[in-house]
Length: 273
Image (cartoon, rainbow, N blue to C red; front, side, top):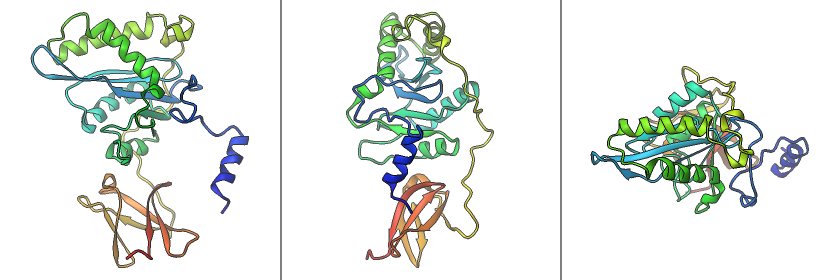
């Protein structure tokens, strides 16, 4: 097999390497080439509604157009609530190629555990999840700028009493932001002038990985992140409980890679005690 660096250089010469937001050049202005190439997603800091309940605004901004396909009033920051909100957004606007988030829940954490059930769900939809470097919120500047506008033009103007009241205010402002409010970074054009829905529709059911005949596969138990191989149990991320994984050999006869579709998620070293 050619070295990873060789493959990278070949792809780079043919213009097939996408720029990584949040990498070493995060201080430079980055903009995705087309709508739905990259969506930035985050929660704006929670606040308290007039009825005493907590409000967690979920925001999504298209990196190319600054169009906001999602501004949802949620009561929690759980993967279940985010998944439900995004399902409606995907059904209306189609699927992006990539989503760019920080390292917090539900899409990851600061300890580097980035395999979550939320990310696995996105992979089955064909959406790659990219994380910013820890403690570098500037790499998601468009989302941060959207939050400042939301705070100044909605949150600080009047008290929001209930979740329904908050969502009504969000919907009204999101329409103004997308279709009426000039954006300086767009030469005073509105985001809707640069946005178009994705050509990739939301499927009725997320796809499952298919492995070639002869591939060694294992199904992870529903409650424990382990698989059995060569008479021993090996740890895999808990996010893959209930999923089928492939075990593939490496050039080192004592090592095997554990894959979810084409994604390496763990390694097996038979020399380990």
